[in-house]
Amino acid sequence: MPSPDKTESPTSIADPDRRDFIHVAAGAMAVGPVGMALWPLINSMNPAADTLALSSVEVDYGKVQLGQQIVVKWRGKPVFIRHRTPKEIAEAVADDDAPLRDPATDASRHKPGKAEWLILIGVCTHLGCIPTFGTGDYGGWFCPCHGSHYDTAGRIRKGPAPKNLYLLDYAFLNETRVRLG
Image (cartoon, rainbow, N blue to C red; front, side, top):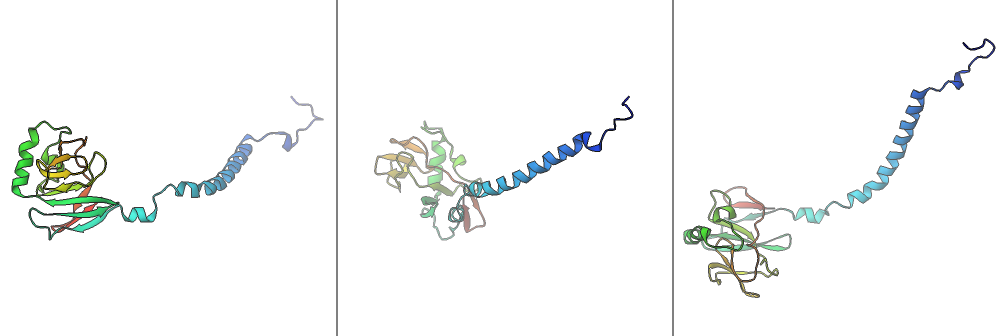
């Protein structure tokens, strides 16, 4: 029991709840300016507006005749949009079981129900050259720089290229338009 002549002042009793509040408030006041200082650095890591504008491209493929192909540019790369003939499709399906360096079926190279449309990035997977269509040993693309031969599904069949021609994300918007990317 405290002695009657000694009285405790209100300031000598520590209020732990008050001290916790002061620490939290001071921490919050410090985090705000740090966040504001770091925001420009973090925001600079986002892609530039011109890059985002090129991330997807809509293409009108309605005038591409059977057996023809158009080449469009997407992110600085050529993209082959090929309207395959029934003969080309049959040849590609027949070669599904052939020994392939980079195994893939014809069905995995196009959208379901759209076997006549093959959309590929037109860059050879060996050293980045641009193959031409119809001059290869398998009826597909041929890279004249180093001799890579691709079939009508864009699969590597002969030459130094290690992989098939790359696929990209695309979606058919209607019967004449496709969105690349």
